[in-house]
Image (cartoon, rainbow over all chains, first blue to last red; front, top):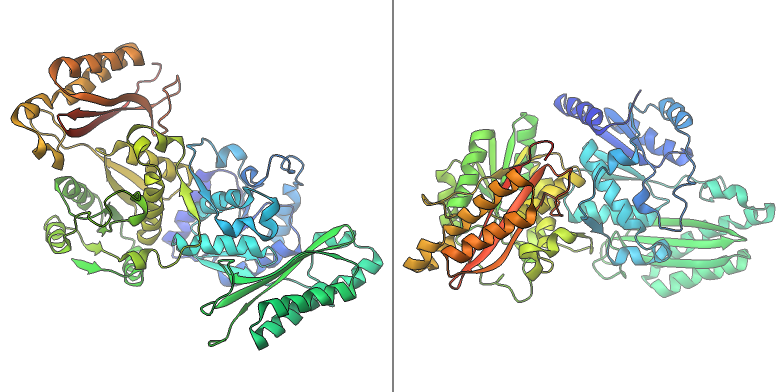
Length: 284
Length: 284
């Protein structure tokens, strides 16, 4: 495995791979790798000739009061983990390498970014789109790998790829779950024993809502069922449960083909997110 | 020469060219081709295996009170002219083909777009960046060809290519001039005989300012010289004469490497633009 830090060295590697007609899988990360990242890398490994993982804590997606400086970093550990799952190339640039100058041009996410988790993070998804567009241009991936856990991020990047004709395939890797259905998260360790027993109700509620919506096409009824389930089975507080057209994140209509059902719930002090993305049969 | 109108057909052509390791030259146009466009195409022809010309009147770069509907279109004539200079592929999509849906994501030009010609066209350069980014992703050019005559457009696109790491070379093709130095323009036919005799003073003034700036490094003095020349030699009204760092279009500093000297002058009722882009010797 190679670890490179400059755009010049990365470009040489990518050009050589393209020249040899290799497929390229890109796994963009901010490092401090966990099981979710490794699942993305393993999926990329199975599907591509060259697997590139970027490790870059992107300052432009952090708000002024967010934790850019204190965001955890451990490159030696990340390198060992990436190598263990077959990554070929780590691209770990400095901030100066990625942003040597600023001509003031920005990509702005639209109303997609103002709802769900984006409501409390103005500008966050603009920064995500900026760094992802740069990484796409630098690594020229055949396929790019993102975790479905961050469904709003995936939806907004998918929209950019679609509307700006990026020549790549978005690969959205399913949520990894515990045996009882709880979505894996580094935050799950904060749950008390009784909270941990309640937490699978979020996934159950999303399943109930999905089944209900597929059977009836009624958004309000499906969401009410999910909310009732969470209220009955947990002491948690619902931040949001939404059912929206995917990837546009607008209300579902007769022409909607894919749906995102997403929830954020506080179980005790711990905010957990989960979601389901599913396809509608024709003629809903 | 092939004329195609769908993204699907274009992608097949581009993939075949890439598979064969061909270099690709892109000439983006809004059609109604004139000598300037043909010079771009001829330059692309000399430097690339495959020459792609896009012909698309892009609605997103027209303001609400501008002439999108009445903008001149003549595809049969354009096809004949493009073929005469060796274009391989014309991509002439419909608006629906280019913008089938809108997820609301936009590229916004920064302060670069608020000066010079951009001051009177809010949003114009955002639309230019949107369509150019899409065309770059669709045609994957080795080199993209733009005319230096539209210097602000070239500066802003060059900045996007630089700051978002588009994997291509920007080729800025010099201004074509009449024998007396007047920049060629389809607007020159509006000049009366006496106005036509005055018009070369714009290019002369830019040359005087360039020489002065290279000799002294004094922006204000260089611009004053240019203004005095235009005032002495024409009855025209100066819209702007500016000397800025290129491509960022900010005031020149000790680290500036390239300079744009640009003018817009009304000669009678006709607004003429001209410019010079030049490199500074080290240690100005």
